[in-house]
Length: 219
Ligand code: ADP
Image 1 (cartoon, helix red, strand yellow):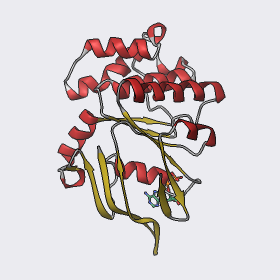
Image 2 (image 1 turned 30 degrees about the vertical axis):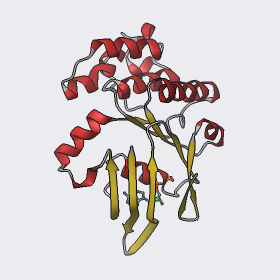
Image 3 (image 1 turned 90 degrees about the horizontal axis):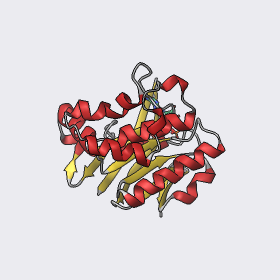
Protein backbone atom coordinates (compact mmCIF):
# COMPACT_ATOMS: atom_id res chain seq x y z
CA UNK A 1 0.00 0.00 0.00
CA UNK A 2 1.15 3.53 -0.82
CA UNK A 3 0.30 6.47 1.40
CA UNK A 4 0.79 10.07 0.32
CA UNK A 5 0.66 12.64 3.11
CA UNK A 6 0.34 16.40 2.70
CA UNK A 7 2.47 16.69 -0.42
CA UNK A 8 3.21 19.99 -2.11
CA UNK A 9 4.86 20.42 -5.52
CA UNK A 10 6.32 23.75 -6.59
CA UNK A 11 8.82 24.70 -9.28
CA UNK A 12 10.99 27.76 -9.38
CA UNK A 13 11.01 29.23 -12.89
CA UNK A 14 13.33 32.23 -12.78
CA UNK A 15 11.88 34.57 -10.17
CA UNK A 16 8.43 32.93 -10.34
CA UNK A 17 7.28 30.11 -8.12
CA UNK A 18 4.78 27.84 -9.84
CA UNK A 19 2.68 25.83 -7.40
CA UNK A 20 1.16 22.72 -8.99
CA UNK A 21 -0.57 21.40 -5.86
CA UNK A 22 -0.43 21.89 -2.10
CA UNK A 23 -1.03 19.71 0.97
CA UNK A 24 -2.59 16.79 -0.89
CA UNK A 25 -3.11 13.38 0.73
CA UNK A 26 -4.43 10.04 -0.50
CA UNK A 27 -3.89 6.29 -0.19
CA UNK A 28 -3.44 3.66 -2.85
CA UNK A 29 -4.36 0.04 -2.19
CA UNK A 30 -2.79 -3.08 -3.65
CA UNK A 31 -5.74 -3.88 -5.93
CA UNK A 32 -6.10 -0.36 -7.36
CA UNK A 33 -5.79 0.58 -11.01
CA UNK A 34 -5.38 4.33 -10.54
CA UNK A 35 -5.60 6.77 -13.41
CA UNK A 36 -4.20 10.26 -12.90
CA UNK A 37 -6.01 12.52 -15.34
CA UNK A 38 -6.14 16.21 -16.15
CA UNK A 39 -5.16 18.71 -18.82
CA UNK A 40 -1.64 19.03 -20.15
CA UNK A 41 0.59 21.02 -17.76
CA UNK A 42 -1.62 20.41 -14.70
CA UNK A 43 1.01 18.34 -12.87
CA UNK A 44 0.19 14.70 -13.65
CA UNK A 45 3.76 13.63 -14.44
CA UNK A 46 5.11 15.54 -11.44
CA UNK A 47 2.65 13.70 -9.17
CA UNK A 48 3.65 10.35 -10.69
CA UNK A 49 7.33 11.18 -10.17
CA UNK A 50 6.69 12.07 -6.52
CA UNK A 51 4.70 8.90 -5.81
CA UNK A 52 7.23 6.70 -7.63
CA UNK A 53 10.27 7.97 -5.74
CA UNK A 54 11.80 10.06 -8.53
CA UNK A 55 11.03 13.55 -7.24
CA UNK A 56 11.09 14.63 -3.61
CA UNK A 57 8.07 16.80 -2.86
CA UNK A 58 8.68 20.29 -1.43
CA UNK A 59 6.64 19.23 1.58
CA UNK A 60 5.00 16.03 2.77
CA UNK A 61 5.79 12.35 2.82
CA UNK A 62 5.33 9.28 0.63
CA UNK A 63 5.17 5.85 2.28
CA UNK A 64 5.53 2.50 0.54
CA UNK A 65 4.39 -0.17 3.02
CA UNK A 66 5.18 2.13 5.93
CA UNK A 67 8.63 3.05 4.51
CA UNK A 68 9.07 6.82 4.30
CA UNK A 69 10.81 6.60 0.91
CA UNK A 70 12.34 10.09 0.86
CA UNK A 71 14.02 9.49 4.22
CA UNK A 72 16.12 6.73 2.57
CA UNK A 73 19.57 7.40 1.16
CA UNK A 74 19.63 7.76 -2.64
CA UNK A 75 21.27 4.35 -2.89
CA UNK A 76 18.62 2.65 -0.75
CA UNK A 77 15.80 4.43 -2.55
CA UNK A 78 17.16 3.22 -5.91
CA UNK A 79 17.31 -0.32 -4.53
CA UNK A 80 13.73 -0.18 -3.20
CA UNK A 81 12.47 1.28 -6.50
CA UNK A 82 14.24 -1.44 -8.50
CA UNK A 83 12.96 -4.26 -6.30
CA UNK A 84 9.43 -3.08 -5.61
CA UNK A 85 8.33 -1.08 -8.64
CA UNK A 86 8.39 -1.00 -12.42
CA UNK A 87 8.08 1.98 -14.75
CA UNK A 88 6.87 2.28 -18.33
CA UNK A 89 7.08 5.39 -20.51
CA UNK A 90 5.37 6.90 -23.53
CA UNK A 91 8.55 6.48 -25.58
CA UNK A 92 9.28 2.94 -24.31
CA UNK A 93 12.94 3.58 -23.28
CA UNK A 94 14.14 0.25 -24.66
CA UNK A 95 17.83 -0.27 -25.42
CA UNK A 96 18.09 -0.47 -29.21
CA UNK A 97 21.40 -2.38 -29.15
CA UNK A 98 19.96 -5.27 -27.09
CA UNK A 99 17.59 -7.97 -28.35
CA UNK A 100 14.06 -8.11 -26.99
CA UNK A 101 15.05 -11.00 -24.70
CA UNK A 102 18.05 -9.11 -23.31
CA UNK A 103 15.92 -6.00 -22.77
CA UNK A 104 13.45 -8.07 -20.73
CA UNK A 105 16.23 -9.64 -18.66
CA UNK A 106 17.89 -6.31 -17.94
CA UNK A 107 16.30 -5.50 -14.58
CA UNK A 108 17.02 -8.99 -13.25
CA UNK A 109 20.70 -8.44 -14.10
CA UNK A 110 20.65 -5.05 -12.37
CA UNK A 111 19.12 -6.50 -9.20
CA UNK A 112 21.19 -9.72 -9.51
CA UNK A 113 18.03 -11.78 -9.03
CA UNK A 114 17.79 -14.12 -12.00
CA UNK A 115 14.41 -15.86 -12.32
CA UNK A 116 14.11 -17.61 -15.70
CA UNK A 117 10.71 -19.05 -14.85
CA UNK A 118 9.25 -15.56 -14.46
CA UNK A 119 10.85 -14.45 -17.75
CA UNK A 120 9.20 -17.44 -19.51
CA UNK A 121 5.85 -16.58 -17.91
CA UNK A 122 6.07 -12.93 -19.00
CA UNK A 123 7.05 -13.87 -22.56
CA UNK A 124 3.87 -15.98 -22.76
CA UNK A 125 1.64 -13.45 -21.03
CA UNK A 126 2.73 -10.62 -23.33
CA UNK A 127 2.89 -12.83 -26.48
CA UNK A 128 6.55 -12.05 -27.17
CA UNK A 129 7.63 -15.52 -28.34
CA UNK A 130 8.25 -14.49 -31.96
CA UNK A 131 10.06 -11.27 -31.11
CA UNK A 132 12.79 -12.46 -28.75
CA UNK A 133 15.76 -12.26 -31.13
CA UNK A 134 14.65 -9.00 -32.76
CA UNK A 135 15.94 -5.53 -31.90
CA UNK A 136 13.60 -2.69 -30.77
CA UNK A 137 13.98 -0.45 -33.89
CA UNK A 138 12.15 -3.03 -36.07
CA UNK A 139 9.17 -3.41 -33.72
CA UNK A 140 5.81 -1.63 -33.91
CA UNK A 141 4.83 0.78 -31.11
CA UNK A 142 2.49 -1.76 -29.51
CA UNK A 143 5.17 -4.47 -29.63
CA UNK A 144 7.73 -2.10 -28.06
CA UNK A 145 5.35 -1.31 -25.21
CA UNK A 146 4.70 -5.05 -24.63
CA UNK A 147 8.46 -5.55 -24.30
CA UNK A 148 8.72 -2.57 -21.94
CA UNK A 149 5.92 -3.99 -19.77
CA UNK A 150 7.65 -7.39 -19.61
CA UNK A 151 10.90 -5.68 -18.61
CA UNK A 152 9.13 -3.64 -15.93
CA UNK A 153 7.54 -6.80 -14.49
CA UNK A 154 10.69 -8.93 -14.53
CA UNK A 155 11.50 -8.15 -10.89
CA UNK A 156 7.99 -9.09 -9.79
CA UNK A 157 7.11 -5.56 -8.62
CA UNK A 158 4.20 -4.69 -6.35
CA UNK A 159 3.42 -1.56 -8.35
CA UNK A 160 3.75 -0.47 -11.96
CA UNK A 161 4.01 3.27 -12.72
CA UNK A 162 2.97 4.22 -16.26
CA UNK A 163 3.58 7.68 -17.76
CA UNK A 164 1.28 8.13 -20.81
CA UNK A 165 1.99 4.52 -21.90
CA UNK A 166 -0.35 4.74 -24.90
CA UNK A 167 0.53 8.31 -25.91
CA UNK A 168 2.50 7.14 -28.96
CA UNK A 169 0.14 4.32 -29.97
CA UNK A 170 -2.80 4.04 -32.38
CA UNK A 171 -6.31 3.10 -31.30
CA UNK A 172 -5.87 -0.67 -31.71
CA UNK A 173 -2.52 -0.83 -29.89
CA UNK A 174 -3.87 1.44 -27.14
CA UNK A 175 -6.69 -1.00 -26.42
CA UNK A 176 -4.29 -3.94 -26.51
CA UNK A 177 -1.90 -2.32 -24.00
CA UNK A 178 -4.68 -1.10 -21.67
CA UNK A 179 -6.30 -4.58 -21.72
CA UNK A 180 -2.93 -6.13 -20.84
CA UNK A 181 -2.37 -3.71 -17.96
CA UNK A 182 -5.84 -4.53 -16.64
CA UNK A 183 -5.04 -8.25 -16.81
CA UNK A 184 -1.75 -7.71 -14.97
CA UNK A 185 -3.58 -5.70 -12.29
CA UNK A 186 -6.25 -8.36 -11.81
CA UNK A 187 -4.28 -11.60 -12.30
CA UNK A 188 -0.82 -10.72 -11.00
CA UNK A 189 -2.08 -8.46 -8.23
CA UNK A 190 0.13 -5.56 -9.36
CA UNK A 191 -1.04 -2.05 -8.45
CA UNK A 192 -1.20 0.17 -11.55
CA UNK A 193 -0.74 3.95 -11.34
CA UNK A 194 -1.13 5.45 -14.79
CA UNK A 195 -1.02 8.99 -16.15
CA UNK A 196 -3.12 9.70 -19.22
CA UNK A 197 -4.93 12.58 -20.87
CA UNK A 198 -6.93 10.20 -23.08
CA UNK A 199 -10.59 10.05 -22.02
CA UNK A 200 -10.94 6.61 -23.66
CA UNK A 201 -8.61 5.10 -21.04
CA UNK A 202 -10.58 6.27 -18.00
CA UNK A 203 -12.89 3.26 -18.11
CA UNK A 204 -10.00 1.01 -17.04
CA UNK A 205 -9.56 2.78 -13.71
CA UNK A 206 -10.85 1.42 -10.43
CA UNK A 207 -10.15 4.91 -9.04
CA UNK A 208 -9.42 8.24 -10.71
CA UNK A 209 -7.25 11.05 -9.35
CA UNK A 210 -8.21 14.17 -11.25
CA UNK A 211 -6.55 17.59 -11.40
CA UNK A 212 -9.18 20.23 -11.00
CA UNK A 213 -7.98 23.85 -10.79
CA UNK A 214 -4.86 22.99 -8.82
CA UNK A 215 -6.68 20.61 -6.45
CA UNK A 216 -6.65 16.83 -6.60
CA UNK A 217 -9.99 15.08 -6.59
CA UNK A 218 -9.73 11.42 -5.61
CA UNK A 219 -12.71 9.11 -5.84
P1 ADP B 1 1.47 17.20 -17.01
O1 ADP B 1 2.08 15.84 -16.85
O2 ADP B 1 0.07 17.30 -16.46
O3 ADP B 1 1.54 17.71 -18.42
P2 ADP B 1 3.85 18.20 -15.62
O4 ADP B 1 3.88 17.64 -14.25
O5 ADP B 1 4.74 17.58 -16.65
O6 ADP B 1 2.31 18.24 -16.12
O7 ADP B 1 4.20 19.75 -15.57
C1 ADP B 1 3.35 20.71 -14.96
C2 ADP B 1 4.00 22.07 -14.99
O8 ADP B 1 5.17 22.09 -14.22
C3 ADP B 1 4.37 22.52 -16.39
O9 ADP B 1 3.89 23.85 -16.54
C4 ADP B 1 5.86 22.51 -16.42
O10 ADP B 1 6.37 23.57 -17.16
C5 ADP B 1 6.26 22.62 -14.96
N1 ADP B 1 7.47 21.79 -14.71
C6 ADP B 1 7.54 20.45 -14.80
N2 ADP B 1 8.78 20.01 -14.50
C7 ADP B 1 9.51 21.12 -14.20
C8 ADP B 1 10.87 21.32 -13.80
N3 ADP B 1 11.73 20.29 -13.64
N4 ADP B 1 11.27 22.58 -13.57
C9 ADP B 1 10.41 23.62 -13.70
N5 ADP B 1 9.13 23.50 -14.08
C10 ADP B 1 8.66 22.26 -14.33
